[in-house]
Amino acid sequence: MSGKLFNKKYAALLFILAFLFIYIGNIIHGVNRPLPHTNISYESELKPVYDPVFLSDITHQQMDEQILEQDIFEYIKQMIQEADDWIVFDMFLFNNIYQEEESFPALAEEMTAVLIQKKQSNPDMEITVITDPVNTMYGAFEPDYLAELQDEDIPVIISDLTTLRDSNPLFASYYKMFLRWDTLKWGNWLPNPLGSNGHDVNLHSYFGSLNGKANHRKVVVTENEGLITSGNPHNASAYHNNTAIAFKGELVWDLLLTEEAVANYSANRTLIPNSLSQTDEAHTDIYGQVLTESKIHKKALSMINEAEQGDTIWMGMLYLSESLICDALVEAAHRGVSVQIVLDQNIESFGNQKIGLPNKPVAYRLLQEANSNLQIRWYETEKEQYHPKLLFVDSTYNARILNGSANFTRRNLEDLNLETNLYLQSDADADIANDIREYFHRIWNNQDGQFTADYEEYKDEALWLRALYSIQKLTKLSTY
Image 1 (tube, one colour):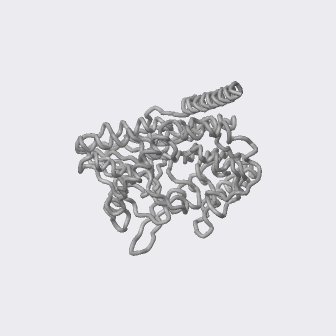
Image 2 (cartoon, rainbow, N blue to C red):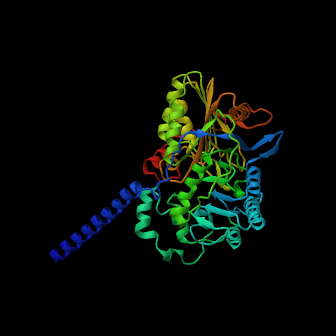
Image 3 (cartoon, one colour):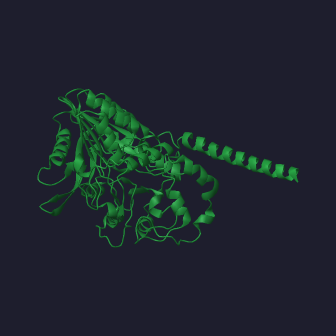
């Protein structure tokens, strides 16, 4: 009898050890696996940039009335209409799903119609759409608008996330062992987490989303110019505040290389055209780089660390939590740099209420550790988000700009998500610098409207919230 009991205990121990060996092995491999293409985590050379244009979508209050100032997707429509040879349209959220009790502009449908109209007017034109599998809820259904694009001979590439590194490794390892099997895709019977007007989804949809992987890029490229933005052609995001920069020159080729990397490893497709349109290369004092993934992190840190006494660091951000960047902001304030940060309150996401993570605990920490040179204001929002990812270092003689898709979080900056940002450096009096400086001064000082509020107005310094944030950071069981 004792021998049988010993054998059962021995078998149980072997099972536990085998489970831990596979589970821990999956974790180690998942966070260290090679990136799927050589042009993922890309840093271009510093190159001349021509005709850069700063664009913004701003939602604010004026005399108890909601005011919408929207430029980004109008500019994108114009880019599409003016293209003659090819278009690459890579957008993270490209869908019309939201809570049925809400009402939003039909932004996804509008962009679909513009792309189809362009293809119909020029059938030989190469148009490629790249997007994230969240729009299909990880294969649960095919959205009508994506089917319409493919019916018009516009290929739609769903980014392959499986070969990206794991951002939630504790869950991802368990998922790979037990939850990724096709049996979980049988039957769509669960409500769509993106909104009640969406198709029902399956268990695999929910488990897939918990992996926390994404092609989070927001890029449009044509033979004429490139554009990198924080905005999505997503109905429920149509009122969000966002920023974008369009540009011309040889750097457009680098942007296309980063997009071809995703198309190549996801669908074995090549995007490289025969040539780009020639730019009227008059003299320019503006230079730039295309940066993706962890190279964005490297550039952001260098911009903050190189700021000197008398400079101003402006930041507009949806999510701020990356530890090295937070440390660098505190150190900059102690060097005599003016650090002025506009943050989203993190209280709303697609109709769902949130509790202020990560920005409320991070703001508290920054103000505790820095001096009075660091100031934070909250953007005033209702059902929209303050969604930019914009860093601007304003010096006496020059300006440095970083804008794009990447929130300043571990998930966005450490070769986990796919991200794209544009870096620019210019004279302090360049038009692009003046436009961004004016943008920040306007929302910081509430010029001609109510944009931002003092830190004290919406702070949440609760110990439990800070503790929850610390646990999530430690375990990596979060979206940041």
